[in-house]
Image (cartoon, rainbow, N blue to C red; front, side, top):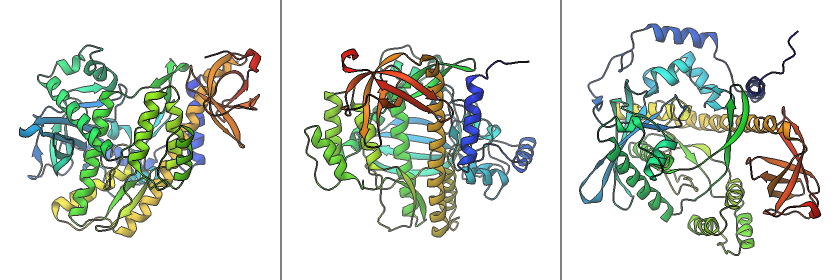
Amino acid sequence: MNTQAPHHRAILQNIARRAMLERGLLPDFSSEVLEELNHLEKSEITAGGPNGVSAAIRDLRNLLWASIDDDDSLDLDQLTTAEALPGGKIRILAAVADVDALVKDGSAIDGHARHNTTSVYTAAQIFPMLPEQLSTGLTSLNQDEDRLAMVIDMVVDANGELQESQIYRARVRNHAKLAYESVAAWLDGKGPMPRSLAAVKGLDENLRLQDKAAQSLHQFRHSRGALSFETLQSRPVFDGDDIRDLEIQQRDRAREIIEEIMIAANSAAACFLEDRNYPSIRRVVRNPKRWEKIVAIAREHGADLPDQPDARSLEAFLMKEKAEDPVRFPDLSLAVIKLLGAGEYAAEMPGMEGMGHFGLAVKDYSHTTAPNRRYSDLITHRSLKAALEGRPAPYSYAELEEMAQHFTRQEDAANKVERQVSKSAAALLLQSKIGQEFDAMVTGAAAKGTWARLLSYAVEGRVEEGYQGLDVGDRIRVELIGVDVELGHIDFRAVHPERRRSI
């Protein structure tokens, strides 16, 4: 009889599958999807899709396209390249995978994607929105493969303001699959040039130009009130099928390149549809309803914010706190993010007074740049194609409104699954450390409970004992007294003052 305990990965996979089903998400593809996929794989698929290449599709394969993503990412949605223009302007091109070329509206594959609306990235397993034969194969912008793409072509001035943009279809080719960490280390002078970057002549200068454009885009948005946050996010590091550590993901310059270019591209796509009188789905963050609580938090830190929501004032407060207390800034960031409220999807008709995106300081903003991972982006691509070809809008405003509500609900469900599995992963790592003491910081103190974050693992748990007198920001010593892997619960006891160590 085999009595060996199951590996951590298997435990987390079971937790993830159960959590998805409980929240109405589909962890598996149906037989209809697999049959349809098999037909796609057996057909002769060119870079132009089953119906061949249209004369309206440009051939841009010779440009210095490259992808930058996580080292282990295989579902590549975006490529970028840049060109210097006179007067300090920079032309930035973002190529986004043309998933609609193979995933047709009304198909079984489309139906699964429309139900889940997003890929679910859990600690032990990815549950892709599209079958991997598509998302990491035929519709992924893989290195050294010709692919169809939607190209957002933008010109940015020396101050970081978007001057003009156009959108068209093109054939592209990824010349280098790059990773955030190694590119960031090279840009910062802390590491060598990645080999895949060095292998493509001129790509190093091109990336530095992209970095320059991204920095100016960032500065321009923040001058208009875009908010600076820094939260601690950790992911499990596996040794085989068992967790050996939790790794904190750091923000870096390479990530900022992609973030800034994609924010600009998403805004350009929304404006493109608005200008052509097409309804669209927007990504919005409303003016915070709990602004008064944000004002109170700022006052506790010696800062005065206006009575009405004002992004510029909030950004100035955040930057001041980040400079003065970088250790506590991630917890302040998380508190403000929660009070701002979650992002959501909303349908908009041309001419409507849109809600915009409060955190990004962008009025017109769609999700366009990740169609392998998000269904909203696929919907936007279909609208962009209709506008390019002069066809009627593929979806009515009423249909988009219904879809937007569905997208928001499913995204919330997916986020809850990912959080639950992350907490369970942390509980698995810590279950062998029950009885040990750790340095921690209090992150929440209210009638519903007191919470603390370990400084060594960036793991949060509830202080079940000895929490009296503790307040947010206190640095304390805690003892781990219990975990519940299935629920992702982690429980601490605050060490008595006479045993508390100074951090």
